[in-house]
Length: 129
Image 1 (tube, rainbow, N blue to C red):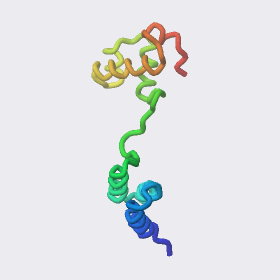
Image 2 (image 1 turned 45 degrees about the vertical axis):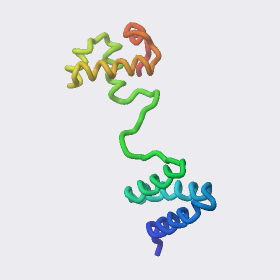
Image 3 (image 1 turned 180 degrees about the horizontal axis):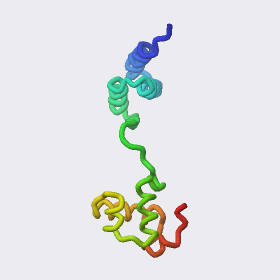
Image 4 (image 1 turned 90 degrees about the horizontal axis):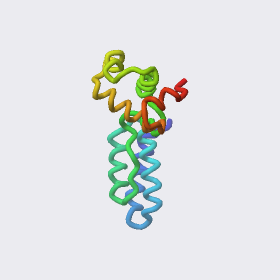
C-alpha cells in the first residue's frame, strides 16, 4: 500500500540531514518535496519545506493566490478593453460592470500598457476579438 505522505516526510528529513554536507542535493530534494506536499494538499508541510529552502537561498514560490496573467489581458481587463474600444467613459464602464470608476481607471491603464497603445483612440483601432 503506497504511503506518499510518509515517504515525502522521510525524504524531507533526508534532505535536512544532507544540508551540512551536500547543500545542492538537499536543495533539489527539498524542492521536490515542496511539489509533492503541494500535490497532496499538505500546505503546512510544503510551507515548512519552503522555509528550509529560504534558509539555504533556494526559495521556491508559493502556489497560493490568484493566477497571474502576465502581459495577457485578464478576463475582466478584456471586458474593459472592449468597452473602452467602444468609446465608453470610465463612469459608463463602471456602471455596466458594477465596478467603481477608480477600479475601471486602473483596469484601463493596465489594458493600455499591456496592449502597448498610448490612448483610447489607438485602442479603438485594435482587434479585441
